[in-house]
Length: 234
Ligand SMILES: C[S@@+](CC[C@H](N)C(=O)[O-])C[C@H]1O[C@@H](n2cnc3c(N)ncnc32)[C@H](O)[C@@H]1O
Image 1 (cartoon, rainbow, N blue to C red):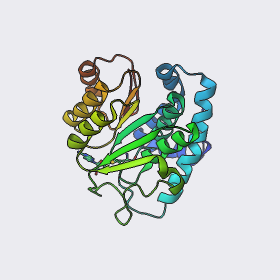
Image 2 (image 1 turned 120 degrees about the vertical axis):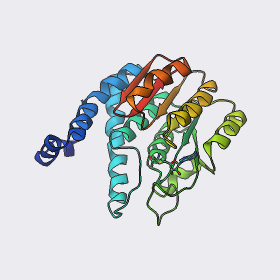
Image 3 (image 1 turned 180 degrees about the vertical axis):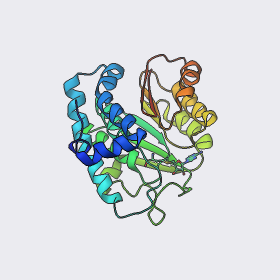
Image 4 (image 1 turned 90 degrees about the vertical axis):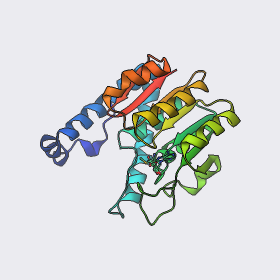
């Protein structure tokens, strides 16, 4: 079981007692290894190793973020390492994500691609700047040395995603983290799924009541929910 040490102190336990969200977070943290094992069918040794490597990336991101009072929205400390682990284990050629903002999810993905020594990340964002540190450019968290595997495209995913998928012809891993309405999530997942033969679809900020609708729409049964991060295996 991988639980970062900073979650195992008195201060954190006090916060958990006061705030039910923290209890949920801690349970999810403890369960994520088992859920990853079920969805990826990889060895627990490999999962443990990659989750602990991802903790180093998470720490770097939170270190950069601590100077800013407004962070915007980004993958949580629970979710980033899960995404990293999936990319490390699947070793994809093509990853597409919608929703970049500060670039936390992109940083986890690009670190994993670099470790894999293969693959590219195609990211799409509206450049709304609503959900990021305002004075920074989009994707500012992404280290310079990882950007050679990154293509950023600015615009609405409703327009850009179908174009990209058609141009690329296939995708191995798709991450939705843009506009979190059921209609938009279904739009992105449906079209991405049509271009995945065997791979993974991930959607952040998923309400539990959406899961059946998503699984039915995509005709996919195998899935795991990590807090509000839905991972589907095709
Ligand atoms: C939650 S943030 C992304 C956080 C990012 N994944 C991270 O971990 O740092 C959502 C982003 O989605 C973008 N967005 C919202 N609607 C969009 C759309 N229709 N097409 C493309 N991007 C969109 C916003 O501009 C915003 O930057």
